[in-house]
Length: 113
Ligand code: 5GP
Ligand code: ZN
Image 1 (tube, rainbow, N blue to C red):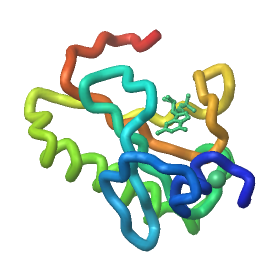
Image 2 (image 1 turned 90 degrees about the vertical axis):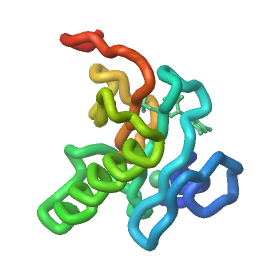
Image 3 (image 1 turned 60 degrees about the horizontal axis):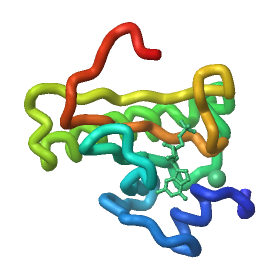
Image 4 (image 1 turned 90 degrees about the horizontal axis):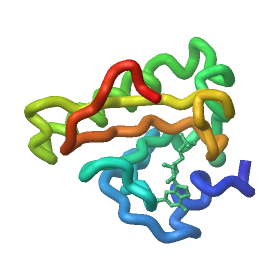
């Protein structure tokens, strides 16, 4: 989909603070960070959410988590961090291009709000 905020960020038509790029995935700083480290990791393929994903996306979904772990190491989040997919409006999803939140640098509560 071309008319999508995160597709446009991936194509660099909208500026962002990119922290990772490869042929499958790009990652950038969240514009409204909810923690000292708040990075969004997206597939280049436009998928709305996990609900939209299928078996052919399994490797990409695993790679999102592994790149998040790599960035967490680079950012020295040795005490813990959180990776989150919000799927659908009731879960708080507001941008409908699948993305993994990487949050760290503060304490997190459970259950989440
Ligand atoms: P969601 O609520 O869909 O799980 O997460 C969307 C995230 O995208 C939010 O944390 C929000 O701050 C972030 N966001 C929305 N618009 C922009 C933007 O234009 N640039 C960046 N870098 N982040 C954005
Ligand atoms: Zn998109």
